[in-house]
Length: 168
Image (cartoon, rainbow, N blue to C red; front, side, top):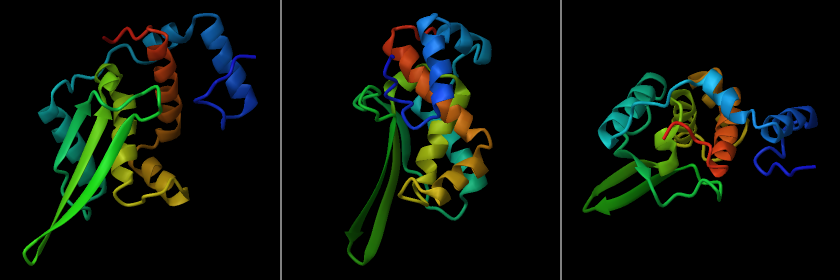
């Protein structure tokens, strides 16, 4: 039985379906049908604007995002698809904070819905540091299809690892 390292916490019947998609080489056609095109947010300014709009609509009381970027140093294979950082520095009597999101460079070629799910995930970390019930509730509030998109994100990783990412 093929090990599915990104799907270990999913039910066995779903893992069987995923194995079948992979073994019969249908994963790529699944993605082509479900997500015919990749996103158009190819530069940092567009990505920042897109992320800020989501944040402003759902997380109004959180601090301003300083930057959102694709980062070639995060590694999809090691499981780091995106990172969020919160830095606070004291300048005299003022406390200055920075809130940044860095997304894996390979996600430049993802479908927009999958990119949105990852942005939602990283934005939710500004309110909830841990992956707990409140965290996932917030993710689903912002993106109702969050759990399906998270599954598809994991499938996208497999597709990319196999060199079958046709969005490039």
